[in-house]
Amino acid sequence: MRRGFSVSKAIASILLATLLLVTLQNCVAWRDDLSSVENKASKIEENLEQLHREMEQRFALLENRDGRYDYNNVLLANRRVLDRVIDSIVRIHTETLFEASHASEPVPRDSRGVGIVFGSYVLTLNHVVTQKSLEADTPFGRITLPSTKLEEKTYLVSSESRLILKAVLKDPQLDIALFEIPANNLNLGSLDCPVGNSDELTVGTFLYIIGNPLNSGVNTREGIVSAVLGLQGTEISTRRSDLFVISNGVLPGDSGAPVLALRDGVPELVGLVQGTVGSTRIGWAIKINSIREALSQFLGEDLCVGQHAVAYQNRDDPS
Image 1 (cartoon, one colour):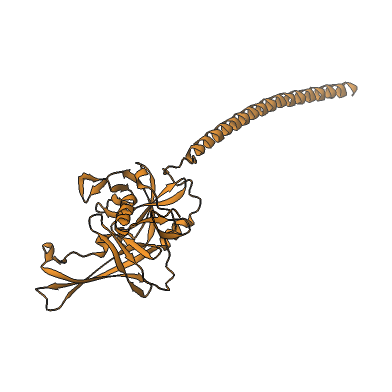
Image 2 (tube, helix red, strand yellow):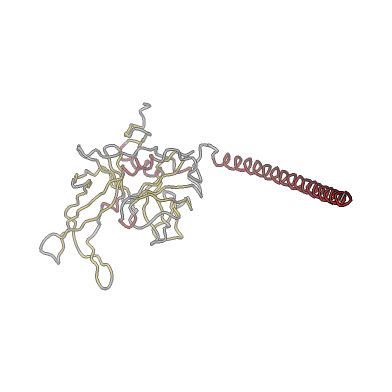
């Protein structure tokens, strides 16, 4: 009996020793695994720190405020500025009467577009508010009919109200028109962003175009300056210094739309959309510097737009 007990005790001791050995081996393995996990975690942490430093450097480059026009909109802090620009865009309706030999009564024609309100003025394009001749669509295409223009009136349309506008300047060569708004109680918005310097635009400058594409209503799109010299109509081989080319933002119906560039995140008016090459979304705009020069030569005044006020100030007035 004692001998059997001794054998059982010996077997139990062996099993206990084996269990302890296995446990010890597992502990060593777990320690090695833990050490490996710690090493991997340390490497991941190092990689994350390196990535963080790289991202900081990249954003430091993006956020570099250098006084130049931006190539992105990362610095645009106050997006309500765009809403205020949208509020300054109004609908323009022009009615023209022609006397034609084929008709016993005057023949009416109308055209519609958009303009930008600057205080008590509306700035738009001349071709939006001017109809040179009486045209008609035929099975053979669009033709010009012999006619004489009798009168032409341009209205600002707001809800159900119409205000007849007084023409202050029409420049068919540059293709701009300026109208004076009569006294009213319509509470019209006014452009509330600085007028920029279009001579400082460069290829790749980021743009916002706020227009009326395909007459679908006012909306905002992004684009870039793709050439600092503009197209002469559809003649691709001809360039004009008073125009610049826009890529990925312009559609038919955008004539007169304001073009904004960002200078250290602050939107500035740098041009007005004049046309587009079909439906390619590649178009061109009139540079704001050319517009300012034309206005100052005609009015003896410079277009000065502050961030919170809009006014025409005499260019010789230091105030």
